[in-house]
Length: 214
Ligand SMILES: [Zn+2]
Ligand SMILES: [Zn+2]
Image 1: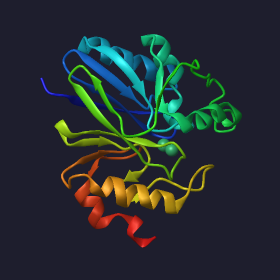
Image 2: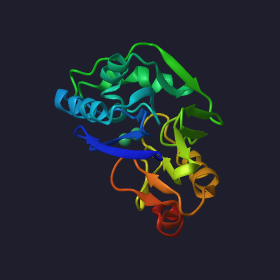
Image 3: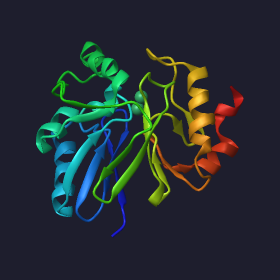
């Protein structure tokens, strides 16, 4: 069986959590599952697939993408994989979790696999290239899977638009470089799985994305 992707939409921010899996193994990307019911939905899906979870990855560490990081890393006894300079973003989450409406947020253990960008990650038959794409957050990365022509892109591009740059570490010029030099260099047929909203493609966004106005 080839590699497949399941999308879950979690928490008040309607954040997309992705489960990338084969018939034997899987990885969880951006665990936004905050409520117990959301977490159980993810765990039940994994159990019914009969797969072994090999890694928990972050594109970036804004609160909406990490609300389930502790639950998931504890459940599968795994470290959290993220860019090395995104750890500061993760460490800032408790300072604003309550005012964003997530008083029950608790931090994942300080057990990390740190990325720099440029790596190729391999989990049995799942293979991902890591690209460093800052601008929405300082240590944002995307996970590109050439075998299935898909990139898990977090909050870099959305269908028609792009990630906000007004949060700490945001920078429109840096984001433009990530989009034009990294994302738009991927093959046009590449499917973009976004951190919010529907999927799109590199070709479509090259034609129509609002970033061209900036
Ligand atoms: Zn974000
Ligand atoms: Zn987000």
